[in-house]
Every structure is written in C-alpha cells, then in structure tokens.
Image 1 (cartoon, rainbow, N blue to C red):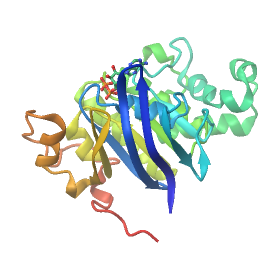
Image 2: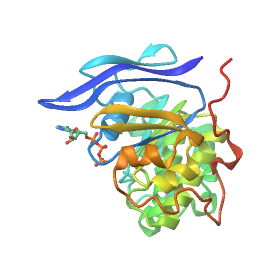
Image 3: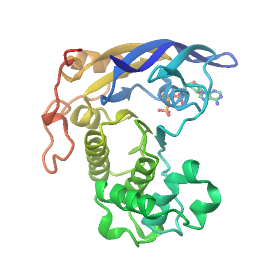
Length: 266
Ligand SMILES: Nc1ncnc2c1ncn2[C@@H]1O[C@H](COP(=O)(O)OP(=O)(O)OP(=O)(O)O)[C@@H](O)[C@H]1O
C-alpha cells in the first residue's frame, strides 16, 4: 500500500511551470532519489511535498492525509544545513524538537530526559556521538550536514526530505553523508526523498529513482532500470564513464543490501 501519494501536482510561478502534472506513489520505507538537471523542478517537488509550497493543482497525501501545511512527521534537510554555528552538535540536534516542544523550551534546553536521549541517539545514528559537545563551527561541512540529519531525526519523522544535501561537499564527504542518510533511513524505516546532482552517488545509494525534466516526470524506476540511456535522456551529453561500477571504500548504506528492482507489493 502506498504511504505517500503525489497526485497530478502542477506548480506554477507566474509563467514558469516548475512542476507539470507529476504523479507517483511510494510505499513506506522506500529510499527515493530525485534526479534532473538544474531547474528541472527537484527542489520545487520536495518543497511542495514538505508543505512549504502549495501546489497550483493536484494533491499530496501522506498516510492518507492531504499535505497542506508542514507537519512534524515530515522533516526536511537542506543543502545549507541551517545549523547554528555557535551551538554544539548536541544543542543543534536537540533543536529538532522545536515544533513539538516550542521555541523557548528548545532554546533554554528545558526538554525532559527522553528528548535529550533522543538527541544523543540521533547523533549516534549519524556517527557523531563522540562529537556531541563540539561547536558546529569547528566541524567539517560533512559533519555539519550529519548534524542537520540528526536534527531532522529528533523530529521523529516518518518522511525525510533532503534537498541536495551533499551539493556543497567534496566527493568523499558527500559519500559519507549519503551513507549516513541511507543507514538512518533504513534503521528508522523512513520514507526518504533525496534530490541529487551527482548521478554516480545517486546510483551508489539510491533504491528507486524519479527523473524530472522541465517539470515533468520522465523516469520512475528501480536501480536496474536506471540505464545509461535513461541518464543520457535526463542529462544530455554528460560523461557517464565510471557511473556503472561499484565505488570502493566505505559501503555503509549503499544499495548492495537493497533490492534493485521493484519489490512485490502486498
Ligand atoms: N520561488 C520561485 N519563483 C519563481 N520561479 C521559481 C521559484 N522557485 C523555482 N522557480 C523556477 O522553477 C523552476 C524549477 O526550479 P527548481 O529550483 O525546483 O529546480 P531544481 O531542479 O531544484 O534546480 P537546482 O538543481 O538548480 O536546485 C526553475 O525554472 C526555477 O527558476
């Protein structure tokens, strides 16, 4: 049964059609990567799914409920991590409960033990428990993005939306962050959408892929279906050399442990 349903979404900004009649359904727990060139509508799709933007036409349902405004069970991670430099990794993670506990109690850290435990647990999930006291400004870009993931996890989401979470990172850090995102999603059974520019990283970590071009959905398939022809169709003449071999090094969260074709629906 689908947990998330995007039904005929169109989003216009004046004369610009950012999304054009996009529909798909996703079962709970699936890890979906949204691909497409710059301007194809990836961010608009994720922002609409998060409730930050209203569609011009169509509807999004999560767990059978229309998504009209942001909801705590849908967490968003941004490219610029949006974390506070002068706060520790722990305090930043704890601030993920801000919607649930209120701004003041979050800033004053008046949360109870279970909430504090949840922040530490989230830092553990992203491999930063030993860095909990570290000020964010002293952390690398990749570590800061992992703090951003931890903060989203503290929100206790069912759906995680990550809008180009590794766009500003070097390739090694990008793989690291994607590995933690993938393993956090698996560990917590989160339905996850992640938009990416880097096709090789997408192939390494993705399970299902949705391809956008000029706001239209032009591809929706699993890893084995994401062929060079599909990538050429999405991106035009980019260099695809090396995209179809497994990477070396840390394999945390890669798809080698995940089905590469559509799972049977029950
Ligand atoms: N707030 C806005 N006002 C006007 N036009 C917008 C707005 N947001 C997005 N657009 C336009 O909608 C189209 C899709 O933009 P979007 O940011 O969703 O693409 P994208 O695939 O995420 O691009 P990128 O990879 O560069 O972030 C683009 O033509 C963009 O200029």
